[in-house]
Image 1: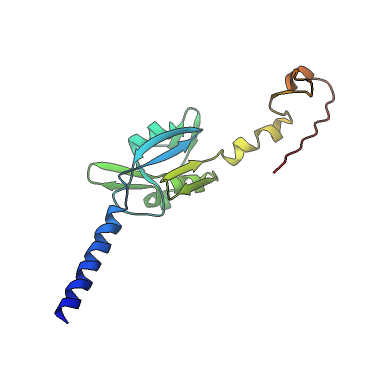
Image 2: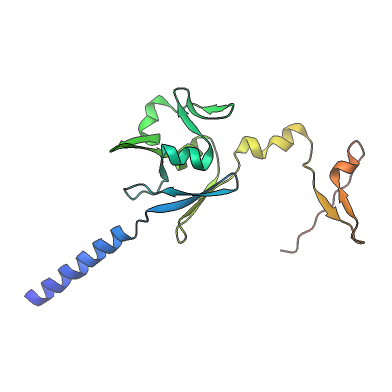
Length: 166
């Protein structure tokens, strides 16, 4: 009986050690199409907590008294929810980037196998072309291989037909 208890305790210890070993020291954040390796939060979480320094390195956002800012863009953090975004642990201040993305309605995805977080364009950025009613410029070849840009047809009526094989 003692032999079985010892075996169960050994298996449980190995499982617990393995679970903590599975928490990586770093992860990759892809923001604005740029991949940046950042330190992982010391405690496991379903959200992405990164240091303030890594926040700036990966996203160019900084924490100011007005909120989370980048260039002329600034998002205030709700005072009643401050603990959902910022946490002090030892000398480091951690920021919940995934909760911030939810706040500003920015899509994101997490690849657990590769420990990669991807952040897409905010809704306002996605709809910028709709607001201006101007399609983004692109260049494609015709059937003869001659290149044509949409900008070449500005001011003219254009019928754009697209097709995809997938």
